[in-house]
Image (cartoon, rainbow, N blue to C red):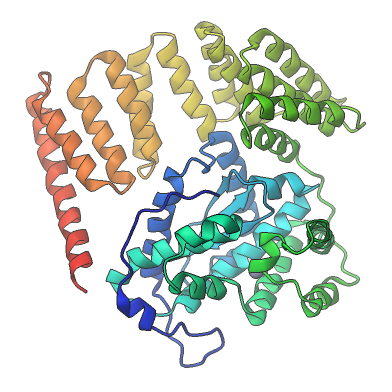
Length: 489
Ligand SMILES: [Zn+2]
């Protein structure tokens, strides 16, 4: 992924520090609080990257999928008990990676290469293993608070280097990035431990444990086709014959509860195929891939192919065609049994109506979808959009305020709220919401600037002013703390 890196000076003491290796009994590791802070710092930069797949439906699928895996092995949350966050980046290279503090990223190429959910699960469960055992924290060792930002830059540099070797020179600063990149390739012991935990998760969650071997084999075969450049996944998780034998020994003769692939897995793959390349040419190529997918005879494959074609048609502005194709996707998915329940199909129906400027119909679809999927955050987001679109802005604001109370860490809800206030013409509240959004994204100076704009707004009430003052005190205190941490070195 092409990561835009801020230019940051590397503190000399980072270089001097010896990164302890795993298994070192005297080791000191990054504390859980520091590890989480480091992960959050890296995530801020990743979220700003144009290759971060900021797609609510994809994020929802990945996080539900990850939650299922975690639920199968509660101890996988590890001693630090992190809240996990799963996300996707736009990159055709087969890769997945764990960041410090419970953030797990998968490349779109990896999801597309997985033929079934068990294969995807095998990679994600392995990454969960690295997080739960705190392998990265152990590699990085104990760091002072002020080393966090340079460390974040180095981890990012190492990630960017993995994905695109050409960019590596520009991104890796001095020899330290290279040293760290080597460190990010996990040790044999770490790999074995992550495999053990990964397999345990697969087994408990009812996924096919042989999915791990078949997928790793395919990744390896793909690497032969590319000659010398091994896929990134194998470079950071070296697949030795010893490791293969170990996995085989652990899975031999094992009976697993067969778990049928969810329709969602195939729909998300179709969605990612489109999102991976939104250029005119990319859309055409995705469409022809879906056309050949329709030759397959399974219901889910056909449903996913039609869904993909409908998504492409909507992106191309052909909303009438998109509606027809989505109906065909529903029909294919329906089969003989119960009607299909998935927020992905319902969500696309809303998006097509919104794209066609059919606001009343969009709202009807969104209300029905919300009744069916009350916990879906992507549907909630669309419901608010549909309310604003059909002129029911007051309802949208009330709804979004409730959502923002529920999900206090979500900057995108604050952005949506700001847009709704703008439609209402409420300037002070609009800039207050924007301030919250910036603060949640970690940009406190920009947040304080928004508070200043809010304070000067002609419609700022006495109550608004009190709120602005309170938020200003809070943001300033946090900002001072950050500046102090930076100066302490
Ligand atoms: Zn690994």
